[in-house]
Length: 170
Image (cartoon, rainbow, N blue to C red):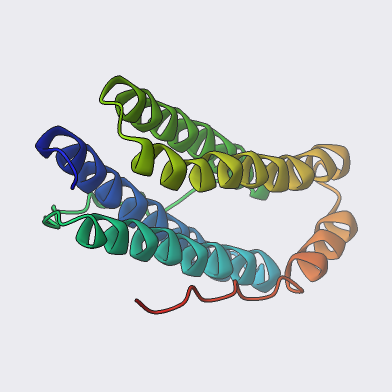
């Protein structure tokens, strides 16, 4: 059984994960409008990954006897600047999400909620991967700067990202 306080915190995180998905979908649309289909594809795959994160947390709340409360999702920005600015904002956002996951873990520890601690460990590990993946894109974007051919090469590379593996349905 999940505590009322933990349930509320997880429901808030569901909202933040929905926002992440929504933001990445907006970044995908923006990337398409500036003529970078590979960037758009990468962001679309990130959107799909974030929806899996939402579903995993949603299912956990229900499986623990909790109640899911879906909150209004904030509207994401429409424009994001240069490709480098897009990925800098992506990195900042992932670092923010990491801080939120750490706060959830702190609450689970405080409440001695061992099941939620175990559940959240997946997200802790996932956030390390998320930040690393984005850093791996920021570095070459910094190197190419405004060089169009370098940017097009990165765009082509990002187009190769595969869709995330769906989670089992519970």
